[in-house]
Image 1 (tube, one colour):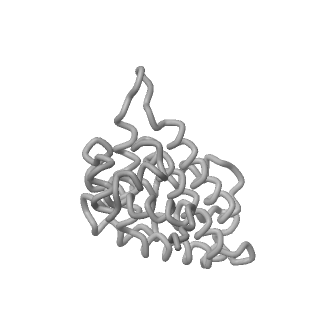
Image 2 (spheres, one colour):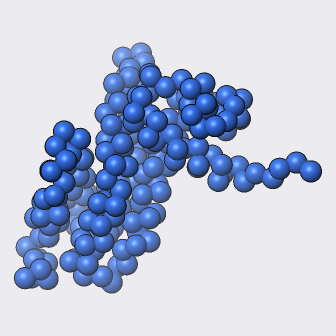
Length: 190
């Protein structure tokens, strides 16, 4: 009897496992053959799920953002006050530090590739960034998109600096608190 495989589950597992490999080796440094080998599958199996490396990489960027957004929104309930939301948000980021450091490496790496004088992954990066910003906007009930952009930019900066100086992560909660907590809800923290 043939083995029954949940295609979407298998595909998501491949994407999840690919994150650290792409972060470590970069887009150019990782071939489909070496990726398949490191994932413990044949190259044919990998091509069964993805047209090519670009397809896999692109889907990985989007799925990372989608899964992070879903996980965060599930953890943070809308009736929580700003302090509780910030606490859960910070714990989420802390628990996944190496994952977000890898995400930063992948985002930086993805923006290096041009085709016909256009960045190859720009539309996908924009979609992923928009997803993160919408999640931040919804979680913290922010009034405008630029506030969510500011928070995301701060987080990208924090995780980028943490690649150089891991001590930098120790103060990120205070930095986040300063940016997220506006004058209107600052009283919740006092």
